[in-house]
Image (cartoon, rainbow, N blue to C red):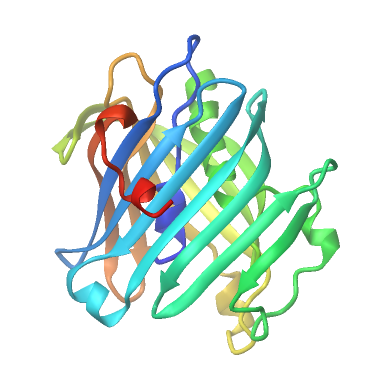
Length: 266
């Protein structure tokens, strides 16, 4: 839950014909009937370049037992529907541990790891051959909304490296429907089925079969603001311990009128 949901909530707006103002989207993540996490995303993907910055905070009793406050950002440019990342940064604490990741991308697109805290002393290494041709997780997920806006379907994939793990993402169209009003959205939406498979970077003490088990989630994309592109409005993630974890869009507004959590950490 701690890895997939923050990344899925990093999904960003698709550029419109004319440059549009960046947006701030806020989500609440619920498990066992309780709000366990709050996520805020600053989204600026209109034009030839993009920026996504998210802040994830554990909430309530979950925050007491597993403290987390983490800012993640990705920036780069677009080549059609393909993101071309330039920088990926993670800064914060997760489950009580300091978390820092800094990745820059070379002219050939190879991710260059500039900082990693804590170091990967308890994980299998990800060789250069598996890092080549990868993008960061936020850029990969931002691609999904761009594909949906241009094709009306979710079908896409990406090779992802986040500094510790190498994974394959695949998304397929599962249909359309009308979601009842909840949080900050109700109305027509497209359902996307997400699957993430770990390729390399498992923990040394993790069972290999368990590590290879795919992570799946249902992601509903809707249009909460008229004239703007699709956003994830609901996410459902089955878990072994908490049943189905749900993320719900609470609000979305232009960045100029919002004091964001992510900006406060800059």
